[in-house]
Amino acid sequence: MQLQFKWSRLEVLSALEAFEIIKAREAVFVVEQQCAYQEADEMDLASWHLMVTLNHTLVAYARVVDPGIKYKQPSIGRVMTVKKFRKLAIGRSLMLEAIRFTEQTFSGQGIKIGAQVYLKNFYASLGFEAVSEQYDEDGIAHIDMLKS
Image (cartoon, rainbow, N blue to C red; front, side, top):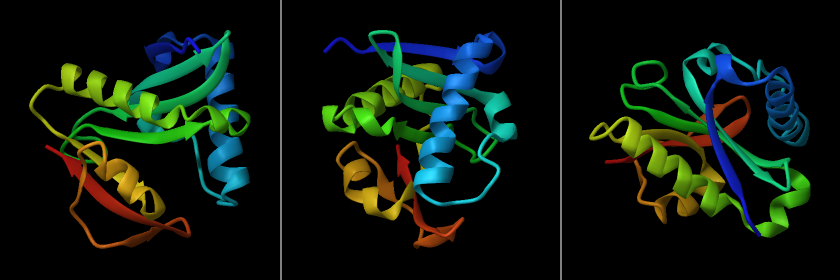
């Protein structure tokens, strides 16, 4: 399996790439998680977008929000794998690439995430530590985590 990683700012994505990203994010975060909220947001304008493709098909996605926008630190978010590709266990590769890029681009600033609580151990295995109590975000339990 040869995954392709592509980093872009929103303004350089093609219309088709932006459509594929929004469609996939809405499928996961709005439809699957039954969470009605404004999924595409202003942070998209201040983010790096990671498209992961396999045979020219979007299979996973994450964004890195610039420091000072969501948190003081840069933040990895909207981490998702398209449902029909989840059996391929792409999540770790996706996060390792997001961490690598973030640490290279924003060296020495750490990385803060708002993680869904059920994924706390997964993120801990990547070096993130819980830095908040559990809180509700759009009806889903979250916890803030930091990687120094």
